[in-house]
Length: 351
Image (cartoon, rainbow, N blue to C red; front, top):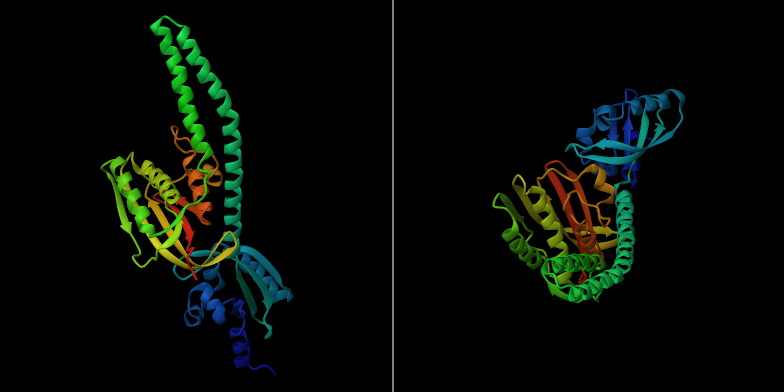
């Protein structure tokens, strides 16, 4: 016969998060993996109703009661589990009758990690497509521009009227402007030139440049982790990537004034596009502006996509490409008053 203490010991040896509910759907026990997932001790979880764990899913409670009555099992995916700190995480939940008959067992699987890997892969694929599109379009545009500019120069030589020559100067000027835009679309294509440096050298350089450009009401706050080690990367590429991100943040708050926070941290055991790194540098650029338009959220790293009427829509895809070439990635989250662009960079000199 299985004793209750034996059952509890067995649950604690499972890697899967398990929550045991009694007949009233009150938490009776939680194994160690469950404590870690919910970020709360079993002692504090005991006595809580199921509605406390899944407050956004009242229909789920009804389905669990059906398990009690009918003795069947089922799995519900993508449920919002509320942790003690009010943080929500998405979990898959398998519900089964408990061996004592009256209660039920919840097996919780955290799929946040898989979601992040999938999102990383999508961003990298987006960037690869964007780069291919930009370069293809740039080559198609560049040759006709050269012909237009050359024809305008030849025409200018034939014109005696100074006022007419002004028109050819406009054509030449616009052709040069478009050529510069095309060169930006092509982006850097040379070999990486990695050197050893500290990420704060890059951020401080960019901060000083942008501070000169920003309006006086824009406050840039530094929140650095001084323990971050030096690492190997192409410094110029990173300067350009961080510059693009910080300029975007400044433009987001320039109109009304606001605060931008530059934050650095170390992240251990972090996956980037399904590659696990022992140590990764995390750089957050946070602004309290109006946020990214939700309609642009899925396409913000595509070229020519911009939330500003005067924006070229090239800053973010170029920054993503520069960081991706270093084995890193740029992510973002946004809501009014809190937009965060996060730059992940693996330590190349990790052992």
